[in-house]
Length: 144
Image: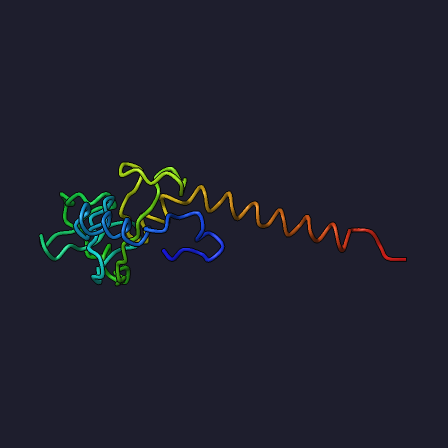
């Protein structure tokens, strides 16, 4: 995920090299959560299951090979194609903590799932701030 300009100063100056080391050297170009390959187009069902052509089998959201075959009704009309892009993520959401164990290579799906609580917190804060600014400047009182 690209870093917003207002958050760039939270990251170390060598972040591109650190991110590259995590994504391509340690993770070998695959998501560390679901094993999706970087810059490849994958067929998926939207619930985490995806087709891995290297092993000619479906994988689940944790990258494990599915044991049972999918039914045709599971596949028809549900298969989508996504281009996978890996990003380096902080497991504890602290951009100052760049320990190797705190960094992970995640695809878009896994990164969004990992950051879900943080995104909800930020969304609530943004909406609360907008409401407060509206109350402050516009108020709920009639203008007389």
